[in-house]
Length: 386
Ligand SMILES: Cc1ncc(COP(=O)(O)O)c(C=O)c1O
Image (cartoon, rainbow, N blue to C red; front, side, top):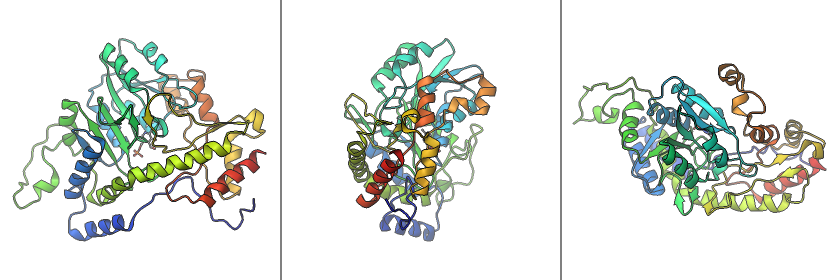
């Protein structure tokens, strides 16, 4: 396929409506651009969408994970079980909160935590489980929460990919302990940078509003209002993790469009699955075998280099030559230098995740992708793998 005349196709692109852009401009002109009425509205809209009693908007999902883990009051040596296949933010925030990450291997196909291995990883020092809903495929939460209940553990769901995902008829965030969503520009909906935390846990609901803003006991925009007071008290050494109204202005409109974006992604994924199913050197992603609605944040097959004759990194290069950007989600988190040195992690601890990490790539997937663009991806991939 002649790709020279095509512009570069990235693996992700945000889809922003004129109404969203206008609301950002209105916010900029309004005289109040940081945390204020638009963040409040976005929090109410998110709580209604997810069906949850509590949502806090934040500067990122990383901030949300840090806050959620900080709320657990971990002590040196406390262990947090998590997946061996995730973005490094999951690990870093466990460490920042004073915990020791315990990598547990994943299942092939969904790339999600292998629940059979979770219980085996529990020790007297285990305090929490942090599952990740990879690409918007829900982890088997009935199993995770059964294990957590039996062993008195907290569950912080890294739902960075899972806004709009459903598990057995319920939205992620509408049940369970605590969930953290990402609104980074590559995600299914965006606020530029941004994130949100939902929780049914009363202590978490009290901790987060204060911890996200320096430990101050009232929100800034109330303090600066005519009937507000400039005086405040500080109840903890808090963080600076609040979301701005400029970001929420985007989020309010993105949330309205989210179900349409997800439907569009599901249709594109069905086309990829059909078009690529006969290629021997590829393993295509699998949906979980229980009732769910998959948000398909990523479409990420793995390549078998021995059959393909090229490896994943070469494939990324070759596709780039054809003006197509592939994503890489992710390298194995426990094998980065810091984690090897600090915790003695090494190859072979989580063989399934490590194999996926070596061979996975993400194909372009975003709401305004055209049929022509998707055909270009499919034809180019077939050519490279011929
Ligand atoms: C699984 C996972 N957790 C956490 C994050 C962090 O999200 P943010 O960029 O909003 O901090 C990401 C970001 O890609 C992610 O993929």
